Amino acid sequence: DLQARRYAVERELLQAEGELRRAAEHAQALAQQAADEGLVLTADGSVQPVAPAPASAAGPGVVRTGDGADVDPETLRRRITELRTDIRALGPVNLEALDDLSEERERHGFLTQQIADLEAAETELRAAIRDLERLIRERFDASFAQVNVHFGTYFRRFFGGGHAELRVVEADKSGGEAGVEIQAQPPGKRIASLAVLSGGERALTSVALLFALLAVNPAPVCVLDEVDAALDEANVGRFVETLGELTVRSQFIVITHNRRTVEAADTIYGVSMGEDSASQLLSLRVGDAVAATA
Image 1 (spheres, rainbow, N blue to C red):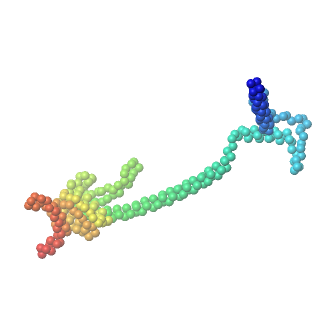
Image 2 (image 1 turned 90 degrees about the vertical axis):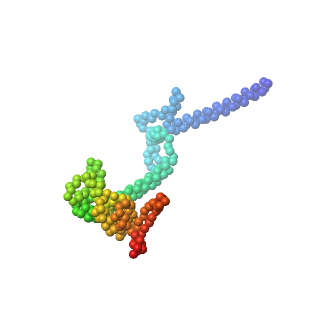
């Protein structure tokens, strides 16, 4: 038992001596590294930079290098210590900084090109918008002038005189909206607002404006729903006559209960009640009916 304990103690002693030796070698390596970097271990265990030794009165020896330059070794040591201190003060150095700079420079160039393309596209779009606005304004002014002329003509035709015109209202700085103003003055009346016109007069004014629009820009099909309901017999005659002139370029579907308007139609569609009180749909081509009765 004593022999086994002695062996165990000897083994622990050998291990301790090995650890002590490794620790001494490590401490010596750290001391050498500190000395190389211009550091010294103080009595309290802290690490401080080595204070530069004052130059002697006679000055240190000067060494001539192989290329003929005179070098002061002590000055070089102090300079090396200063540079190592500055390097340590920089902290950790990113070794991939050059690669990161190259990537960022490439991305910056790409984004700069994209911005240039967007700015060029914006310039082209703004130029196209200005051209479109100018073209739209020119066409609007031309069409507006034609509609205005036809509106005055149809108005005088329906009322037997008077005056009617359209005016463009531009948007003002106070926030007013732009639009088109209708001015209508039947013969013998001084009208300040369309609201004072009678129902028939307002209907004729609306029909005159509608016919003016169709005269300038004909539509293939136009539906008129009871537009002659407020007209008297004389005005219905003018309405039917003018409508017949416009049928050369447009087809009109007129919903009406007026006898004179029905008589002027080419084809009549209606609903009638038979003897059994059931509704029946009727259609009649006036031209075919006249030919059959002739």
